[in-house]
Image (cartoon, rainbow, N blue to C red; front, top):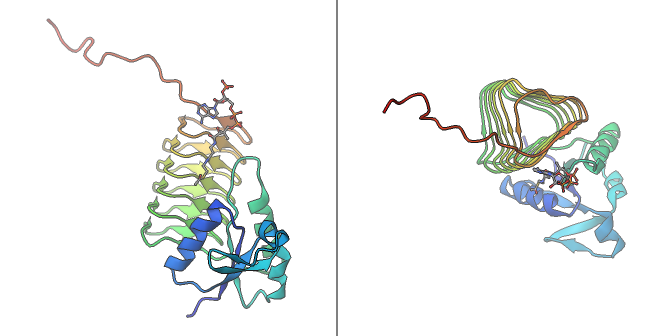
Length: 222
Ligand SMILES: CC(=O)SCCNC(=O)CCNC(=O)[C@H](O)C(C)(C)COP(=O)(O)OP(=O)(O)OC[C@H]1O[C@@H](n2cnc3c(N)ncnc32)[C@H](O)[C@@H]1OP(=O)(O)O
């Protein structure tokens, strides 16, 4: 079945990556909506027509197009979520995008508008909610439960059975060990390892390593 043409929301760094992915997937892109470009009277962005600010979407019937959310996501910035909620309430559909280099195991379920970037691996029976970004090279092992509007930044690793509630942010290169739960809106800093549950709306950053242990101590006699 032919897929509907797409309108891209936003023209920042994340939008560039989403546009590349749409083009790799041979999706027809009608144009981009971005208030910053529209206010400056800019008519073209990366070869796409600038359709206007976000309200330009409403010239298109929800049955005729799909949307791609090009707004990136960082802790404390809810624009991506707000646009998703606003336009799904109006009956629009956000397209789910999977980079051809991504590996999805058996039984993986993806919600509306999930964006699976280059090099991502998602293992068996993981469930992903709506409007999630699995950014470049992120890995989620078996039986993960990932809520809506979560951003798993480049290179982050979630071991098996990790549970991540809605609106969490997991920074680049973070590591979550198996079975750990993150409460709603929790934030894990770049490069941070999470060993136990992080409650809702808590932030964990940093990596204080313990003093080095001599692995030969007690195991050798001289
Ligand atoms: C394709 C893409 O680019 S996707 C986007 C990828 N980027 C991300 O995901 C952003 C990740 N962001 C982080 O890790 C951030 O540091 C956050 C959000 C966790 C914390 O940000 P803030 O709350 O603003 O913390 P802030 O920058 O004020 O730092 C507070 C302190 O924590 C330290 N700190 C912050 N983050 C970290 C971290 N990840 N590891 C170690 N220390 C950290 C800071 O050095 C600072 O220390 P100080 O008080 O001794 O000076």
